[in-house]
Length: 167
Image 1 (cartoon, rainbow, N blue to C red):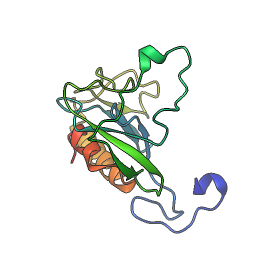
Image 2 (cartoon, one colour):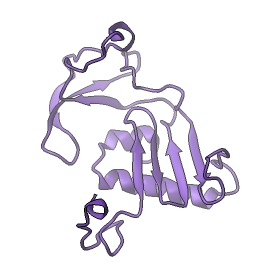
Image 3 (cartoon, helix red, strand yellow):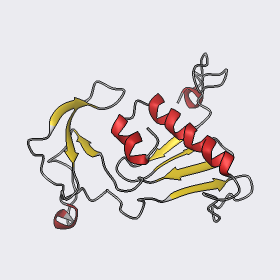
Image 4 (cartoon, rainbow, N blue to C red):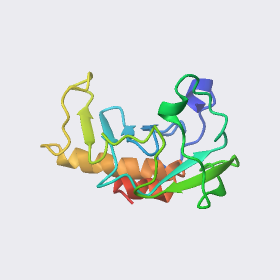
C-alpha cells in the first residue's frame, strides 16, 4: 500500500529501500497459500492432512450466503471456541479449532492437500508448467523459505505454518 498511496518510506526486513515488500502473499487459510517474488510463484497446500486448522470470524452468524445456506452452512462454534484477535490487529474474533472428523467450513479445500506448485513467471507467465519437485529444487527451497518468512512477517498463526509443513 505505501507504494500505491505514494507514502513509501524507509525499508525494513524483507523490504527494499523504498519500504515496499519484495514479495506478495495470497491464498486462503485452511486451503492453499502462495507467495511470489516477481520471478517465481510458489503455491502450497497442507502437508499430509489439513490440520491443525481453525476458523477465525467476527461475523459467524451473519455471513450472507443467500440461496446456498444448506450447501455452505458453517459449523457452529462449540466449547473449544475462544475469543482471540486477528493476527496483526486488534480486531476481536471467535477462534474455533477443528479436529479430524469435524464438519469443516465450505472453504476448506481437500484438493490442495499435498499439492505444491512452482511457476517460473519469466518463462511461463501463464503458469502452465508446475516445476515443483523438478530441476528447480534450489528455487523451490528458496520460495518455501520465503513463504515461511512472509507468513511470519504478517503474523500468521503458528498453526498455519504447521499445517503447511513449514514451521
